[in-house]
Image (cartoon, rainbow, N blue to C red; front, side):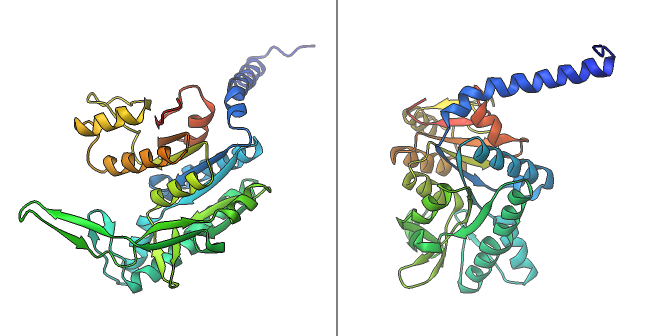
Length: 306
């Protein structure tokens, strides 16, 4: 006899709704089957236990669905907290942390140590097989000292800013990551790299993820941030942008402030062969799944192949 109680009907309706969601996700799952997706993970999502658990489940589900997820993580707030705890003064120039020798030792300890292993543990707790590495492992990334120029509008002069052990990539050797994703392992990577003389360099996580995505010929690079994406003049999300459109929005001031370097670096990644870069609000539950496995996603997709 069929059970027609209200509770049974409600459960049946809920089950049907879940089945419909899975069915609607099928074409998007097929789109990313056996494709590489690099996810830069950081911001508020990393410090919130519930969002961190949701992120871990998303990454495990991607792997189970036949996608090859690679996680590159930041850790600015955690580094700042540890430096303060150890009473090591830290300053910023043009938005970048000046990283002297004592600071870079803490950066390496926090990024490749505590943060990396927390993410690895979280993914493993939700059924994945994550493995934590850094840019130093198997010479994944070779870097050099970042040379950054600063223009002073008051004096109209430009000078070189010394950021210490802040680096920029000069060579990627993704062999270790290729080996990992061909198995059931999920790479979780801390953005530090070695220099030609054995120095340790702190690499911006967006920059690291972008270079890795290009070297891996990734289908997507997802940049999880603390904003919805690129907004128009009315504050509405712009879902898709070509490179030409993005340049135009920078020129007319629609894209401004800290979003400019993020968009400029994203455009370089697309020009290097990655099909699309998406700026995604990491504060949204299951942001990764919503972006990849739904029709319109939830962020701003930048790329020529839309």
